Structure formats: structure tokens, C-alpha cells
Length: 81
Image 1: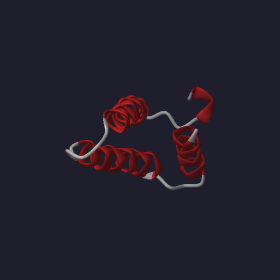
Image 2 (image 1 turned 30 degrees about the vertical axis):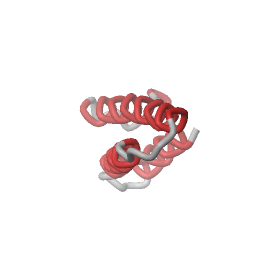
Image 3 (image 1 turned 90 degrees about the horizontal axis):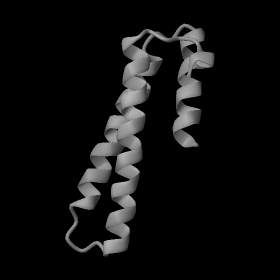
């Protein structure tokens, strides 16, 4: 849900004249992925917690790819999302 809200906010910001809004969203997703990767490398994690983090990474990578496609196609209408 947070990702969807972030992307919708980026579309609103684009409409408001912030031309880098989607790039900022993309950068934020990449930062979250990097932080999660750092966490998953902790040797003291339980198997269950490691699996949860890996699941979140997988979801965030998909989210990153969707935002990247939106940027490459210059989509600025949230109805296209």
C-alpha cells in the first residue's frame, strides 16, 4: 500500500510541476532495497525473519521495475498506472 501511495503522490507531484517526482520515487525504492539487502546479510537473523525480508525485497524489486517502466515510457497520468 505504501508503494501505491508513493507512486500516486509522484503522479500528483508531476501534475504539480515537479518533473523529477517519479525519479525521486524510483530513488527511494532503490534505497529501501539497498537497506533491506544490508539487513538480510546479517548472520544473526532467524530463518523466518530472513524469509520475510527476502519477500519484501522481491516485492520492492518488482515495484522498482514498474516505476522504471513508467519513467521510460514518460507516463504522467495516474490513470495509466
